[in-house]
Length: 299
Ligand SMILES: C[S@@+](CC[C@H](N)C(=O)[O-])C[C@H]1O[C@@H](n2cnc3c(N)ncnc32)[C@H](O)[C@@H]1O
Image 1 (tube, rainbow, N blue to C red):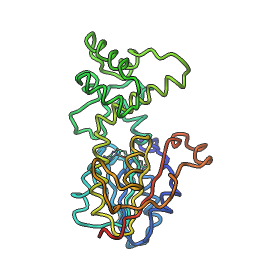
Image 2 (cartoon, helix red, strand yellow):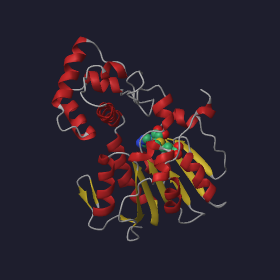
Image 3 (cartoon, helix red, strand yellow):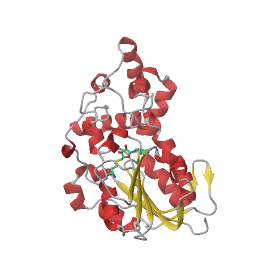
Image 4 (spheres, protein in one colour):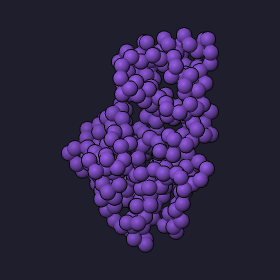
């Protein structure tokens, strides 16, 4: 693949830089490196003693890194392993830009897009043994219900689950279009697109344990951010945003309720892309940025 064709416009870039960098000589983490758009801008802003540690669990994305800078280090790992990656180091700020890069959606050949006919893979980490086709062909009825209800926010999943169960007996569902063709969605192009986006998103969340990783990261990040250091998270669907909002604004994470909040929200409202950004990058439309500061009561 020609690396010059690879492209991902970093989302909410100005807002990220303005809110993340509180000390130009600090250590920062870009926990979702992707094609390095945010990382590059962070390095441009840091002074010579500043450092950036970037993480991505996708080896292929890492392979395309073009940043060469003595202040920069790139690690192939899952951000839920932040504890092992930072190994007792505390940092001034961490950025998480969740989800996938345009490269992964359009060029990785892993079935992330319902518009391309590709194998139902959907693994961000290619070393994992759990594929999207396993979710579809091997999950129990109960598990499929949970995936579509919780991760896709489908109110009535019975129809979806019944169709999958009925069709997978006849033929294995191996590719994205095999999956699409078992559904007949009435209505506009937009309605169909929305249905398949949510269907594919829910399978991807399951394959990559995205909610589990986010929760583990949030809990562990408390110990690795300096008092008054920043945590910035860009999410692209309401399930993730709700988890982040509850943690930053109510001190609630999973079943745990913190009487002293570990992080304090900086802004009353979530930050969304402005009209200018939406025009330049329509993909940014669902992005929501939340910014919080580590409560200095926690050391
Ligand atoms: C939206 S893209 C980030 C784009 C990046 N900010 C840029 O400007 O190029 C999200 C990236 O996070 C990575 N990713 C998703 N979940 C991850 C996880 N649990 N641990 C590490 N990387 C992850 C994906 O592989 C993808 O490259």
